[in-house]
Length: 170
Image 1 (cartoon, rainbow, N blue to C red):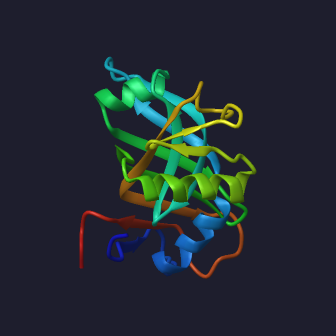
Image 2: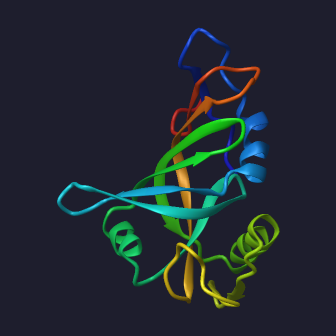
């Protein structure tokens, strides 16, 4: 977990408070989209089933999938989620999760939030059956260290559209 990011309203409305938005993302953000850049600069966008663990979005991906190969070459990614309260875009750097305890928390979050119960196995996830958007098992666990997060309200919220910068500390 990292310190509170710097918030900036994108309109004249008050900015959101990260500590109030994060619990909503932990509970609600799951199905979304991951965009990686190909070597020729073209975007590669694919559906994604994610969970938020330790304050960051995490997801599973087979090591031989196109997205895994592209992320290994260029770790800068963008992820988009829609929840019942807001549309969220996370921009940052993807990192492989190697800590076994973190992998176990990700597996538990998948089981709790999505009904898919992967099994932690040596720093990766396996069965009980294939992940719908991750390719064939075993699955690497990846997380995105955000540099910037945008939230755009789609329902009544006490704040307007907000940008949080994680690389600029107050």
